[in-house]
Length: 338
Image (tube, rainbow, N blue to C red; front, side):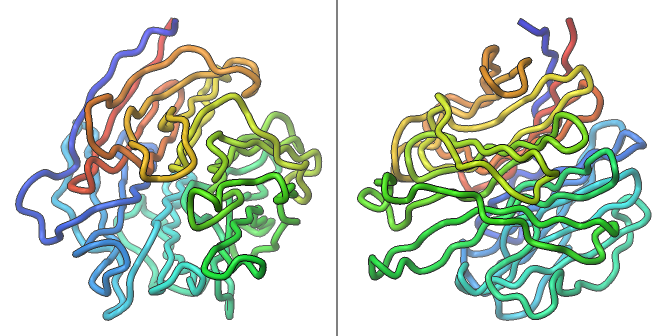
């Protein structure tokens, strides 16, 4: 097994000006610092929920949380940080209902110290474009791929939803975006709606192997993580297929390390709905491009909710953040060695 040295912190603990925190994102900066963001307020969907942020200094100290984005009277959701050197983009959603989301973006050229005013990512879009929860990736030619998904009403089942995934592609540094084809699904075989309010695939996480070969793992309503592959730089995708990885319809994320291993953080719990426990939370590793997953590092295994993880790699160091009991955001620094 790969040797792992680790450090665990809470980005904040007591005395914060919000009751509930969820859906964190993390970015590594070139000077040894890191940024994290999350949404927080009274509770998910509440009108006071805003995007909050904290900076970790090179010596490992987190700043006090500060509000990064807020529009009065409307809920904020799912921040996503994407760093390319000192250039950082913060994506996030606003809207009281997920089906009516708008996507905002703010940009920084100084490692997240100052930001542009928020703007629509895709003017006029309703429903959500760009990264829905997990970070974009950059291909060798500079194309940016943002893992995206939408939630729409199921015309065949009143009160239920269909979840569909795709990729947003930008060939001009994030100025404009073009949707890929939807990831094909055989919905006739999906039984998730019998156990949950939706069926389908959502919140993909991406990696690439070569100039045009791209892959995604997806959260599903089917009790397992699904996968899809692309041979044309994310324009079209293979029919999604189940992996052996159990998952109870909870968030996942993945990062590629410098030595070529993949690190996947997820809840390895079988089940169809989020009423099954979101514990344990683990990191598993693959050295064969995601075909098999072996060594496991346990982040949490006590009772409680440990969910919506985010992971990035800086060389062979991994930064992981996640929701800790909806009360705070936990952070791990994992350093891999032979």
